[in-house]
Amino acid sequence: MEHFSFDKIINEWSKERILEIYSQTTEEDVLDALKKERINIRDLIALLSPTAQKHLEKIAQKAHQITRLHFGRTISIYAPLYLSNHCASDCIYCFFSSHSGLREKRVTLNYEQIQEECKTLSNKGIQTVLLLTGDAPKIVPIEYIAKAVEIAKNYFSSIGLEIYAMDEEQYALMTNKGVEGVTLYMETYDKDTYDKVHLSGKKKDYFYRLHALERAGKAGIRKLTCGVLLGLSDWRCDLVWLALHASYLQKICWKSTVALSFPRLKHTPPRFKPPYPVNLQEFVQIIVSMRLFLPYSPFNLSTREPAEVRDNLIPLGITSMSAGSSTRPGGYKVYKETQDSQDKPVLMQFEIDDTRSVEEVVEAIKNKNYDPVWVDFDPGTLTISK
Image (cartoon, rainbow, N blue to C red; front, side):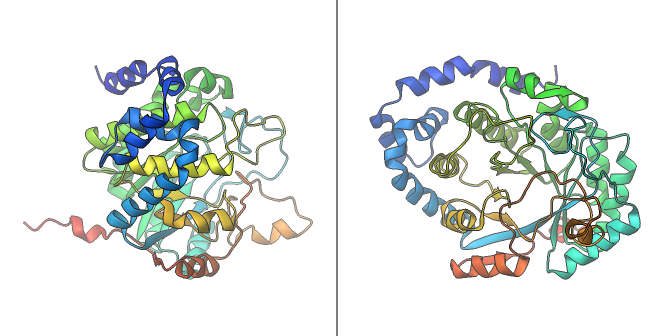
């Protein structure tokens, strides 16, 4: 039956099995992993282990070499564009949650407002955009998303989506509209934790979300971006499952590029405190170790991280960064003024730590002797001569 392949992989790599391997990891295991040209999942566990922290510099050096080999001195630039902050799911870690208790304004942009936001963001030089919504398919239906994509195509060269999980037929519609990428975080692969932090709504369906990226790949989406919310569960287990998932998607959806993002939970609603906070050293260990396991995958880093951290991670595996971001619908123009006035502010998804403009981020990339790339794919290359 459909979908049993990755379910079987997760079952084979149970939390108990992963933790047992961690407990048995030796320094020799870490050094052996560093000697290999390509590492396997047990090697990754060794590199992610506490034992490996004393060798972090060596892991980082190898990650730098691998990234330079496959991506050169380039950093792709993109920006998020929020269409709506309405949400019908109750995820206790998210500001958009239907039961967050936050009283900021809930809005869904109309088509004219979407055009204004696109125009403003395009004028900043952005050519790759990620359209985002909350988990509210009744308020923000597929037809609305499709129209928003049509509008965005007039302003951007590349369009991605980070919205609720959809059926394969719906992803196929997005493909036909010109969507190139889908970003969808599992949040956590630990089902017990997943059930505890997703209290209601469509997103509570663990398995429907687990297989969403596979459906998107089968529907023709060219770039699939996965990730976990670092801090939500035991990250040393979640990263193993994430690596297994990315590897699985590379095999099953071989026509698609599989990318990773590394969102670290720091600013959360008052009712939730991340139980497994990830410090900076661990964060670096995660990125450089995953680079050794997935040498060809683009790695994204958002404005959740402060400027200094983002700049210093450029040589260590990151290949794509957001710039000049707003996590509020209308945050670039339509509702921008309300944030500094007496009007009720528009609810944001999370507080950003890198508030630099697009120009400032580009300058920082250049200062690291890297080249900013505004669009890394030309859809015209897919044209087949008859």
